[in-house]
Figure: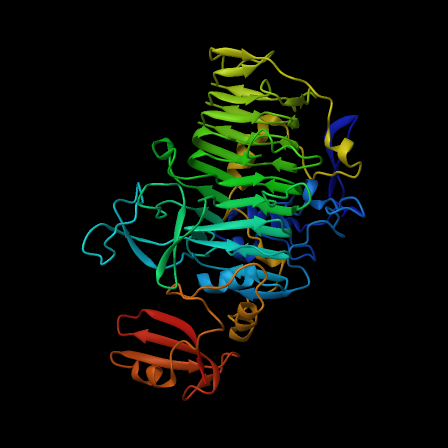
Length: 538
């Protein structure tokens, strides 16, 4: 069964029909006045499915909501559910994040602050990132090593907006790889590889520090989704939803310095990429690694309400093979846009292209169906190379008129139960994407848990020992066999000096001294600075 959507599309009438639902008028009024500042307090209605803000529904739709065909590799009851049914856990550092996302068990992982590897290294310059032979720190610029997380099936990663800054957590120098896995949800997070160290040769590979040595761990994609490159015809992945995230690296000057922001290759199915913000980069999204990457039924993607801003290169995306529903996306200040190439099939609705050289083309082996419904066609403003039959609404002169290779495909040909919550009129798309696309615009976590959990050392230890695809490394890059003990009892007692040390149990009750097990340690400096951490006493 297809999960129910609040809105569905009528093929004979392209406008969206709203099914009645109740939202407090007072709540809507408050949220409109305090959009970001009050996100944690009132951004979502406290209904069972806490997925609305300003009366707008942000729950799952598109291809990722589709179950697939029973009896095939791509079938999943309920569509994309991520870590539903697993424990809700909190990741405070890279090791915890890596352990939970690579574990065999399903998890819903909550993160409320920025995370990087934290392992120092020295490079020639942050713009190039070449690692120095001498890592003593006597020369060069300080950076941190990169790392890789091999995301296992049945995982949900949710970022929590900082109520002070209004920003979601940033994952820096970490590549998230989904290799032939199924059922992943990532929402409300920021990703960058900016400044990630690479080999001294300048080769485009991430370098990690593991067990006392520099180790090459892969391409610097922020997120890479793919099947096995050797046996992609049989191996597969899919049911992936990436929503309300932000991706950035560097500009055109760093064309060969970074790889993709969100790449998708080989035989993967049933994905939705929605309300994401891609900016300040060169080669953005590669869907299909080459002309041979065109498998039967590969890459069914719904791509909607995404905002490309100042992408000074290409791949928005570069699509080879697959079927893509591309609607209500906004492209501004970019170079080469959506390139529908070899064997690719696509349907476009209600997209707005502004100040972009070549926003969309299908004349290099792909085919495109363009909605001609009144109010839902493409809009171009200040662009150079347009598809045949189009002009800029501002009268800007065009350089080329590109032929369109046509198809009659629409998503309902792939699945008759395909639904979408919204199809907004094209003229409204810039304002909608600027308001809602990206991390920190909409608070998400209350859709998954009523309260942000505390760090659970026992569960962390369990995740380390029950890894699915890759091992966990600690804050020094050493392979972990179990959770570390942190600070000893003696260390805690010695940590007084100019500070006041307070101890609490997990329920928040004050202790006269640390007890056996997990303690909350609160340190108050004379300058008023407060730090809180959890430690274990054996």
